[in-house]
Length: 166
Image (tube, rainbow, N blue to C red; front, side, top):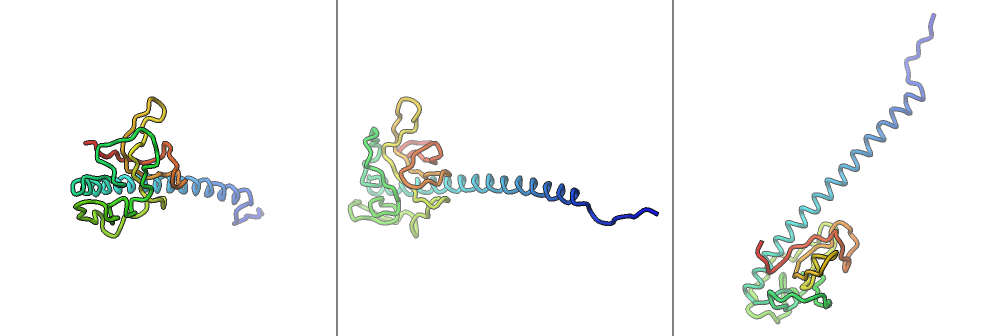
């Protein structure tokens, strides 16, 4: 008479656990990728909304954030950036009192941070061609998925050019 075992052997259990672990890894990686794509899409939508608010500011006051003249693009001098578009100097959600004919706020309740927790910025001398001859444009932007915080410019930045028709 044969002794029939009704359970699993240790090796069978280890194989099942390994397979479940591999499948769980794929699920987590897919979730992270999907979440990052969602964050990027939200930031791009926010930038388009901010661009509309900036256009309204420009139409009312003939100024960009930081009291910058619309259409004027610097050539990398630096120091003209507005690192947080919620500041009074930006003029989008509130004013410092130096924007003539300001009829804002142009966004209600201020701007939320980007999906990675950083404020959106304005830069009138952003180089959109860092690998070749400099090409300076005015942009509003997010520091993007690198999540490294303010003053970090790299290929992950999400930008929307201003002063140009698309």
